[in-house]
Image (cartoon, rainbow, N blue to C red; front, top):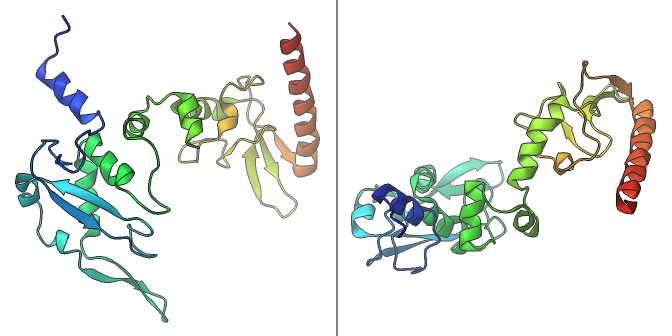
Length: 241
């Protein structure tokens, strides 16, 4: 028999997509009578720009929040002189509240309840698994997202790869690139930079022993072509084995 302690049961519930949608509190996950609070989409300047959703809260969880939040009154976020861009008065507080909810509740808010260009479109459990960093690589690519494996490969490899070069362009701008499309910060690091998929399962990766080499754009173009030809030959040899 598989015994679980109370903490494990809670974690399972927190990380399992809600089944009884519309009758489960997004905050405490109790199946009970809830208040279905609809939040309409706003425009530019709001965190709800092109995004509408719903949050379900039981009496107890609702009473723990500021009732002013849910009046959803509007205020001017900023003005360009011709038009006033508006947001909800307490949307920052609402987002902070959502952030502390269990993933199962967050998924409904951002995922299945979400509507608009900024809404998620994953299945409930896939959304939760992606946030946990356990959604398989193939499923991530199905949704058009970088997988945990791609993120790990990029941040582990890019900064130490000998294929990465520091390029100086004709207009004196510069940047670090590899010949297979990956790029990062100008100092060769990847921290804070958007994940690049090229490092994942790269057949040409090799740890750099010296500092990053500097190249002109013209020299890098030649270097890029040479490495792509080497990779093409390598893949052909692997295929014929």
